[in-house]
Image (cartoon, rainbow, N blue to C red; front, side, top):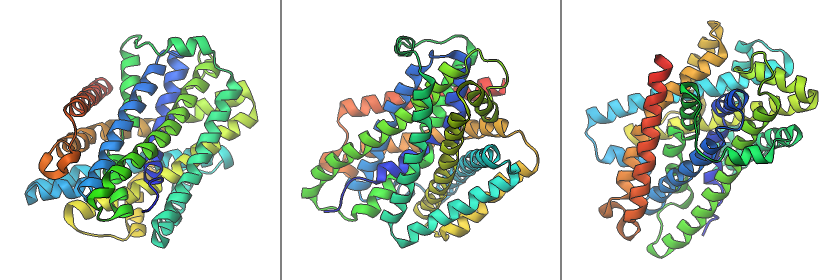
Length: 395
C-alpha cells in the first residue's frame, strides 16, 4: 500500500496563504495576544474538516465535487459550480496579490509585474503535477517548509511574552473590530478549495480501496492531517505572536502587509524583515498553484470537463492581474477576497458533513453521532462567524 503522508500537506498550504498573513498580522498588531484562542480554535476546526474530506475520498472513492454531482440535477450543479468558480477567483486574487506584495518588498518590482511572475511560477509548479502527484507534493511541501521557517524564526526573534500568550487562550473580544478580525482569521483558515481538493487527492493517491484496507488508511490519514495541521497552526500562531510582540502599539500603518513588513524591519532588523518577505513569497507561490489545481478538480468533478492545469492557471490569473493593474489597494483586495471566500464555505462544509454521515455512502465508516454533532457545531460556528464578517465588513 502507498504511504498516507502527503495529501494533507498539500491541502495545508491553503491554511498559510497570504490571506492568513494579512488577518493574523493585523490581529496581533491591533489586539496583541487577545485572539490567540481564535488561531487554536480555527486550526482544530480545520483539522476535523480536512479529515472528513479525506475520509470521503478514501471510503467512497470519490471527491466531494463528484459526490455533489451524483446527488444534484444539472441546473443545481451549474449554480454550484458557478459559486465555486467565483470563490476560486477570489482565492487566486489573494494568493497572487500576496506573491506580488512579497516581490515588491524583496526586489521593488511593480505589483502588476509581481502578479505575473507569481502566476508564471505557479504554472511551473503545476508542471510537477504532470510528472506525477509525488513530484507536486514534494514541491509544495518544500515551499511549506520555507513558509514555516520564515515566520517561525521571525516570531522566535521577536520574543513573545509567554504569560500573555497563554492568557490569550481564554476566549474574549474587545469590541466589534475584534469580532471582524476573528471572523476574518477563521475565514482565512477554513478554505473551501482545500476541502474540495483533499478528497480528490486521497482518491487519486489510493484509487479503489479494498474493504480490509480502510482502517489502516484512515489511521494513517489521521496522522497526515494532524501533523500537517499542527505545522499550519504553528505558522499561523507565529504570525500573530510576531505581530503582537513587535508591532502592537508601534504606530504607523500595520494594517497592510507592506506596512507590517516595514514595522517588523524597523523593530527587529533587516534579517527578520527578509525572512518575513521570503515566507510570504513562498506562501503566494505554493497557494496559487494549489488553488489552480483545486479549481480544475472542482470543474472535473461537477461538470466532468477537464481543462489543462496550465491553461486554467492562465485564465484565472487574468482577474488578479487586472485588479493589480487597476491600482486597487492590495490590502483592500485581500480583505474583499476573504469576504467572497466566506460565501463559499457553507457550500463546501454542509455537503461534506451530510455525505460523511450517510450510511448508504460510507457504510461502516459513517460518522458516529458524536462526530456528526461536533461537525455540525463546527459548521454552524463557521457559517455564523462568516455571516458576521460579511455584515460587519459591508456595514
